[in-house]
Image (cartoon, rainbow, N blue to C red; front, top):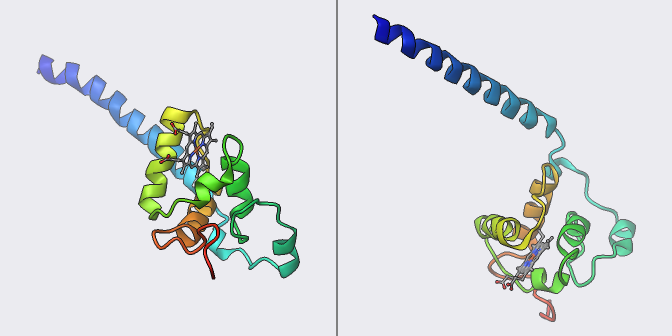
Length: 131
Ligand code: HEC
């Protein structure tokens, strides 16, 4: 029985830790109430006034420009054509190897939605491509 007693204490600590981490994760999730997909479409005027270099003007373009053109030309971004998963992987590489700050929600979803839609594998907005 001595064995049992000495193992329950660490087990309880692990349980408490799991509960704590769980509640932190749950509360972080609930902060993210603004779903980018639920945002109203931008007006033509808002689109016209965007200053996003060569990036395709749409919701999320300003965020991509702000986050990504801080270090290099936005052209580097616009010349890619990646799936959502590959963009996520590229972000990880940018954070791990290139010193990018991790992008927090809800901006992360906004930026990924934008890149997936406008800079996917079929490269609909490749610079210089005829539309
Ligand atoms: C902290 C600086 C920094 C930030 C912020 C940053 N990058 Fe980069 N990125 C780099 C550097 C440095 C390179 C060049 C790495 C190399 O070629 O060795 C690079 C290269 C790239 C490349 C070229 C990859 C390749 O295959 O050559 C792409 C695409 C890219 N970045 C996308 C992004 C996107 C999208 C964002 C915004 C979400 C971003 N970057 C934000 C530093 C940054």
